[in-house]
Image 1 (cartoon, helix red, strand yellow):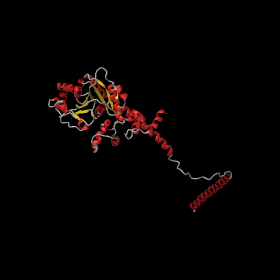
Image 2 (image 1 turned 90 degrees about the vertical axis):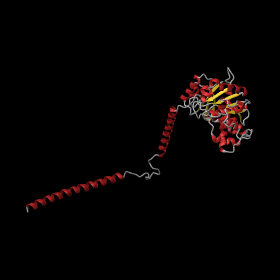
Image 3 (image 1 turned 30 degrees about the horizontal axis):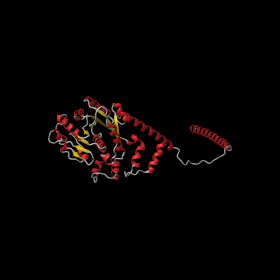
Image 4 (image 1 turned 45 degrees about the vertical axis):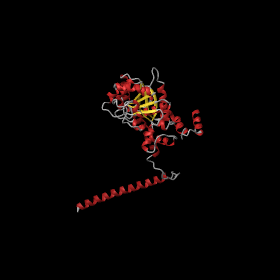
Length: 381
């Protein structure tokens, strides 16, 4: 019994404490409500809150602007990086820095544009029925598209070359390049055409006795040519072939010999060259690359001059300087260089480009007054 009484007393005391705590909490709750009601009496609702129409994040406009700036900066940085690591010859200044005189710069020949020009020019010679023949004709742009900017560039090159005649007559000229695929065969072919158009009797010789190409460009038989003359099989007059272009003759390579350098360095080459000079006004040699083989090096000391063809964006500066050094070592008379494959916009500007492609647009000899007045106002501005 005493234990139960003691337990009852404890429970009653705990109940009393809990009751007091409850009453105290209830009192605090009521006080808090009274305080809250008193504060709400001083608050006014000015405007009802509305949900935003656009999300707060992400901030698209800001991110677009930042992305454009970062992309522009990254692209500009990559451009400068590629320009820094690019060691190719690109401009006339790059060529002159090597020590070479630039006689001319030729725009890049875009095949699709050249083919379009072939369709509109009147009085074209040759058979241009097949696509292959049209592609080959596009390389002879001075003949099939004489009013194009590229043809004008070749005529400028021809004029500059003629003014290099200082101490002796330029009758036999060799055209070479540091490496393959730099446009020397196309360049020497168009140079020969521009000289023939002036009335000079021109002989174009394919002295590349390893990988000849002129017979393909001019569609002549290469089985009898220079090599056959040098071994005494035929004479010069028997091997030379007339082309469809007035005043232009081609001497193909002939049978491919096992010893090209020895043939070109022989006394037979000297005798053949003297005979050619008696028959023709201008003799142009298309030779192999000077760095790859020695054919050009053994031939150029016998000639009146050498032209080094460089291709913009392809010819390495070290290779160009190496070719320049090789020509100097063999006492070649280096007339200058031809920068090939230049972007036309950087050469002439938009005026020259549009003048030739639109002012002489259809090649019918009638100039457009509208186009002329437009360019006149542009030039005056």
